[in-house]
Every structure is written in C-alpha cells, then in structure tokens.
Image (tube, rainbow, N blue to C red; front, side):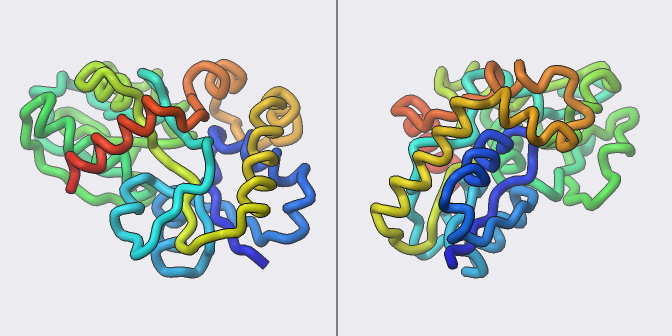
Length: 245
C-alpha cells in the first residue's frame, strides 16, 4: 500500500476530496500533516509520496515531481504572511512558523534581496503567533493566518512580494515521490486530483468543518490558490530553489 502524506490545510481540500472519491483511496494510506511534517516523512522514507514544501526537494536523494498540480499563487495568497505592529524596517525580531519550510526560506530570501534587512530570526513552537507585539513580528502560514488578518496593522504577503520582485508566480508545495512510481498510478493520481479541483464547491460541502476561520473559502480556493503547475510556476520554482542553495 502506497503511503501518502498531504497537507492538512484548507488549500488541499480539493486534492483530498478528489482522492477520497476515487478508487485509489482503497489502495493508499493517506496521512494528513502540516507541511514540515510532510517533508520530514518523505525525506525519512516513512511515506512514498507527499505534498511537500518545495525546499524539501533539495534534501531528497531522489525527487520526482509526479503531478501537474501544486499549491501555488499568482500574487497575494493571504495565508503566508509576516504580521507586525510596526513597519518592516522597524522590526527587530521575527518568530518563524514551526509548520513551515518553504515560507521560512522565502522570508529569509526577501529579507536579504528585497528589503535588505537583518532582524533576529527565532525558531518558534506552538502559540508563537500570540506573542506579536511592538518590534517583534511573526511569520504565520496556513489556516491560522485567517484569524490573524484583522489583528495587526502591518501585513506583508510573501508571495505577493515575490511576484513583485521577480514577475513570476510562487510554488509553495508540490507532489513529490522519493522513488519512481508506475505511470498507471501517476495517471490515476492526477485524474483524482483533477476531479477534486473541478468540484471545489462539492469538496467544501463535504469538508465544511475543516475551515472554521475562513470567511470566504470559495474565494480563497478559486482566486488565491493557483493549482496548475504550469511553465511560469516551474520557472518561479526553479528560480527560488537556485536562490536559496
């Protein structure tokens, strides 16, 4: 049985729904985790396939992107943001989200190449997002960000700033295997994902209890998340990975 780790955020509900409604669900062990755990499981070999933060690709001995779908954004995404009570140039320290890998790397890159700032960066644990105060800011990703967007005066959406800096979209996570999978499985897997993406309203109806903080999940999934791993996203992903090596 193929072991698969997928992100447990709202933005993956179309993927999860598509897999649950497919015949594949009988032949896979589907595990839901936050992004950094997905990465750890694939790197450690405890799963065969995962929706991983793209930085994990650099740590895999073998990495195969097996899907034309991803978690990406063409501009603002609303759920990968730096939150602060002061302007960016006044920030002295930033708490880094323990659930993140790619977003942390993106923040470090933007601090260096875009803002040209060097605040203290702190690896944090559960509850860090409640400690934003004064010149201490925080990077928060995923569904918890929905509840943060009305709390702080300054919000810096990282993928929007990436697009402003590079002119390219950003890829947060891709479906990656750590060994070659059969073409039959890959075809069936992509068909299941596609079915979920073409039935987003139905997917949301089935998973209504999974996103209590999002005021408009339809808008978020249809207009903020961009799922197609097209040529422009591949360019953006390749540029990002080159820059952080």
